[in-house]
Length: 407
Ligand SMILES: *[C@@H]1O[C@H](CO)[C@@H](O)[C@H](O)[C@H]1NC(C)=O
Ligand SMILES: *[C@@H]1O[C@H](CO)[C@@H](O)[C@H](O)[C@H]1NC(C)=O
Image (cartoon, protein in one colour):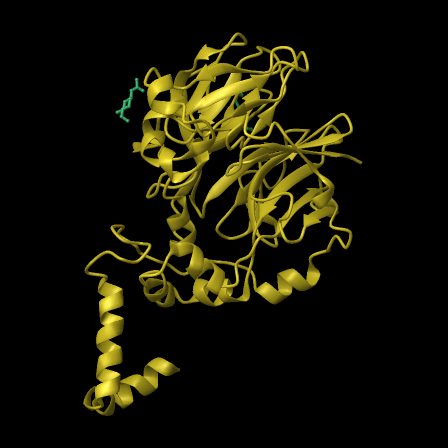
């Protein structure tokens, strides 16, 4: 609408000094010659993507009027750094978790405490990588690539091996005694695995895992959201042939992966599009993808409980502005080139802390919603594990693990 009147009155616009100034200023912002905007040195190419309308989703999303997630307890404060994924071994020991300093660690009880269980590369050294509480700050960014960043963790119940999706080193495995993990997959269909994120193990041994983007690595993950680019993949590693296959391509920030209890389908999250998806592995719909739910924010990992239901960790937050920007990539082109800090731009867009976790039935019905509506106690949750009457909740950005009695 605006564009049309612009072309009609171009002459008037260009003659008026104020408008001429405005156009020059806009041009300056778009060109960003001094790389002052948050997208700075990146080849920023926003695209239109597919997100459900804000009102439709939020009007139908059940709310937790008691803010029950706010009753959680923060444990191991400043002892773990960005524990994204939480896992327990067949002896019930744990949690095991991957940290922002590149290590996989495990909790061995009060007497022993946290111990290093595995690293993903011979490049790992105490001197270059162990930055303690600073691991979750930008101070770690330029070291991540070298030190590794283990995100998804899963034990193979039969062998006791731990499989790791590392953001920089791809899919790896380490024996039950830990140590240096061995790489299994670093490439798929000729492309490097740029950002392995999460995995699950099929009972026949196949490993399904996500590669979040072909354009941006973990440090730059915010640009995947801003661009709306969809170059992520769902991959399958086949142990008998030691080969990696592309299952799905063209996904918008594929993140968590979880097989169903009966192995007939798997769920994965598409973070950019704020949704939970299903991929059928058996039955009449084999090989097809369908929508399970549009979520009120950006989903991360999905984990099964022992009833066969799915916990999804969801973060701040869908906004009405996001919907407009999503449908108009040119606006994002300008907006995110403004020489203003990204956090301020995000706040101006209406983004604020809001944390929610949700439980889905096998058929995709919402069974439970727990919120911390202002993110007072829990912020940026990444995974929910339900173990014997307790929820263990990981976070990729903070230095603690949250727990909550449940049910
Ligand atoms: C060590 O890090 C460098 C630089 O990131 C990388 O090129 C190399 O592959 C890494 N070596 C190993 C053994 O992982
Ligand atoms: C395991 O199951 C997956 C999913 O159905 C299938 O793609 C794969 O070929 C199977 N692998 C073996 C070794 O049977």
